[in-house]
Image 1 (cartoon, rainbow, N blue to C red):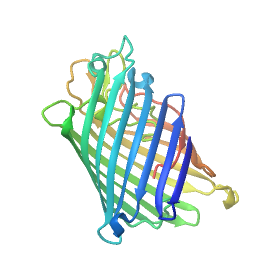
Image 2: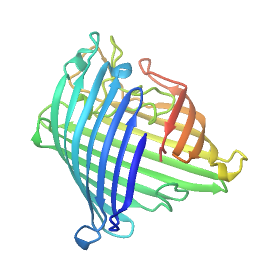
Image 3: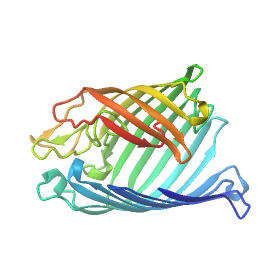
Image 4: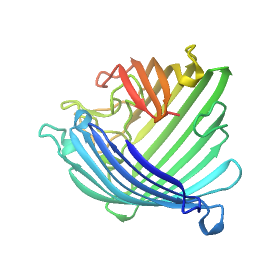
Length: 315
């Protein structure tokens, strides 16, 4: 991952960044600009231009691409409450479908244009947005697609996180999320559904939880999701300047609901759970975590894994 960022463009406090990420299974490039005081008011306004591609053959036997433009604005309602709006238009493409892929994947082949309006309301009581040790944050996201384009849906997500310092170096982090997406006169597309596993539920592989084709074992995603995590950060007795700490965690949740569905689709809203330990290093390029998780509650068709390397922070 490589990024270039100027936080004070031309001495006006404007934020301009260009980032690109390349990995074995995905790539992304993003150009972002933000004017923090639009029209000399306490209103942030900006845009994002992006392109991403992902190889999802291992989980769902297809490749995906998305290219889009987002126009956004955000402003404070009070010292802790902030509201934001965005208009996004993008083209998404499902391609490279394996010959033996699920019929529910094959039916998604092709390109679609998504035009959506998004809203976010955030109440933030944390002592830090980057490395919080006290406080909580609550967030509500709402998206409606269908003003133009080929896709029509409404998506609503509620999420929150809580942080508490038990004692010096011991920090309890908890988070939870619940969401639903509903098609407006049509079925919800593959790329618009919820997927969990991997970073979002350690002990399970990418897209390892949720509706799955019984024959091909392809993950299909779901229209309703709930998941949460509890994590206790523990000191390892190393010098603080190294930025290395241990953790004990448990993750739980599920994703369900896919249309159309048939007798070959395995789907259950039952809760799944995992637990494990890990190590986090706050490196010069950002947090890097090595997690070892074990699935404790699962369905027979779920896909699991033991080790996961994460870049960035989950909370």
